[in-house]
Length: 201
Picture 1 (cartoon, rainbow, N blue to C red):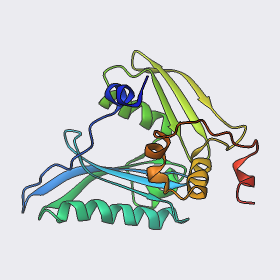
Picture 2: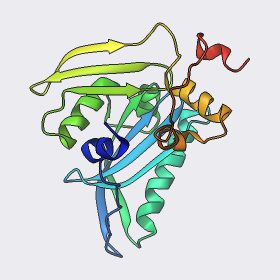
Picture 3: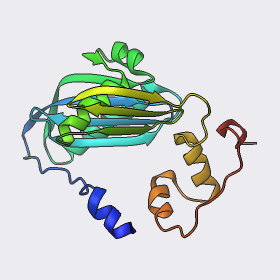
Picture 4: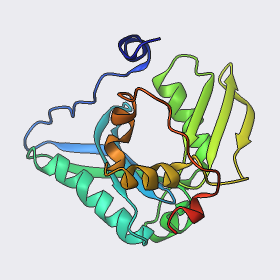
């Protein structure tokens, strides 16, 4: 399968932020994923439509990272002259429990539940979810809307998110451009064996 065919089959259209009416008050729900290497946030309206989203590499303090995520979501709304009223907050990821407590969240979900729920929102009948996290890889197998199997890579960090970020940096690419650059490769690279811990040295 060539790149054009692969993209035609699997690539989703680029997300475009919806236009908000100036002066309007937007009621929404915030989802916050505080992972080991990155923090993600999304603002959904009451119909589940994405109004704003934010992403950044973690800076070592999940509380400060979360505050920056909230500010980014709010700025995307206020830049259109609207204001947001947050009706609920759900956290997930490594720091889900502390962030739920600090920001008085409504729930802290394990990542597998969050992934399965969101996949069913986007796709009619998702079968496999692969989460390449900063420190582990999770594979969730679903059938008829239920999780049937789950696998977690715990043996080594090689191939996980931080490994990919370190490799991208060693080649001079920001991690955000790594996938696009990899698609243009003509050969498969061969990396020496060993855990990501030793890459830095």
